[in-house]
Image (cartoon, rainbow, N blue to C red):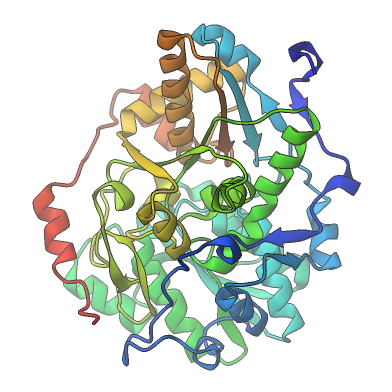
Length: 457
């Protein structure tokens, strides 16, 4: 098919939407290490997990063998309100860069939550409702996950308690108000409302918080309140499973026009959007059917992949959650109060960590000001104000396209535009006013946090 025949935006028909999620773990020769009970250091059982998570989600979390899991009709019908999402050919960006590369991005911002997070939020809320629960608790960093979950809970008439990282709570009041509009209660974390929050505040007075802190508080509230369970917006296997709808749609759209990406790029915080985007492509790579260069892009201020240690660690700062084997900076690591937003988790998905460890993907880090320079360029050329998280992928995509300009290679680059930045205007204001700075943790800071990793034999 000729290049002219490829439209700016490729949409699938509703009938072409995926009917099942894809589970990468089924095709992994080396499976991700199991979650461990923090007390016994033994693999966490389904019974133990069911006290924290919904029963059906526990089954999905532990399933390493089923390649395709059917999307319930109720979830698929909800998806139709904003899916299929468009695959966009960035013709204008290609022209401005003067690159022979072809650039595509999968745009996940076409819903009120403004991001990809709704793909898993609606699934987790559905399973909570199906189980007959009163409500759910969660944490949120930049606010996209909290917004998405509050929407999903409103749809299923569930109570929603959100613990929002304090720096984001203060930087993004409008994101907070969207959550409240959908009926959620929003508490800045760490807070005085939980035992673990009080402990963290005592140990770190004046802290701006972290996802690890907020996770601890949300889990405590879920465990102490009958009829509630905890839900998480990233990191977990179940979340990557739900987000695979992104990659499945992307691949279907590309296959429709005979397009094969050479490079696939996603921003990386806990792993939800990256895992979702790469899922079917990684499946082909794992099965030996095709090869792709896959790049995870993380903030230099929270470099789990590029400077972390591959080891078992707590998923939360309060050290009450299960242990996960992942690339980690240490559960006590609290990132600087920058605008990487949802990319400020100290660790990474166990699935993606295993794939990275086994050499199936690579990782790079980017400094904050360079990320916003890329975001500004993209906004001016492509007309979408991107979320700071997405802009990490944009920067890497631009870098790859400019390399093609130097070498003359006509590579096809695919990246994930995970959401919009219209609730991130404080960050853009600081960038425009020249007040944004770059903070990169020292080796000593990281070493101090890593030194406190739990001893697991």
